Length: 229
Image (tube, rainbow, N blue to C red):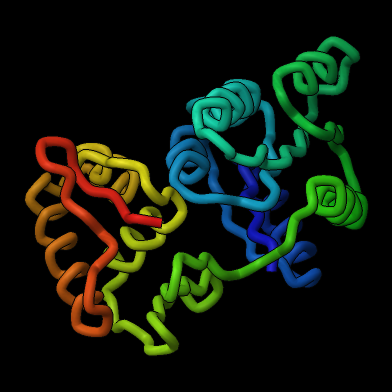
């Protein structure tokens, strides 16, 4: 099941798109402004991202550029297909969007059926599998049910523990400091203290260790944590 992020500040438009794409069987997430969108884009993996140009915070062009820069820094990272969906329809606008890294460009007004068709085309073009699982050895994170199982046994986790293990499984063998995890996993809550990261990590590792002899989440002394993939 493909996972799609829609970055659009006009909620009536994003709602129509969400209804259309969910009817096709996709998982759809929404972001109304660019800063939240970047938090999501830099933390989670999407099969397709639909970007409006003119959103508050980072605009669509800036988001696309930041995404491509981030992907270029990740060895072996496959690019995420980006569809620009915007009211800016001049040749200069289209050229700018495509040259920045967008893979398709559609102007408003539009028919949601065409958007769905373009999403299907992007998934075919980029070989999107539409998987709803992240797998690391005997650990399986189900994106649809937001659950973790190890060797077929479900591990009962709290929401932030799930978010943390999902992030680490999406970024295996990479070291993240507690500060980086606070920013990338707790991005929506600026009141959370750094101690929460340590506490959540401790309970997450304890729960995993109860069903798996060696917890794959390691402490890298002086640097942070990583999940051995």
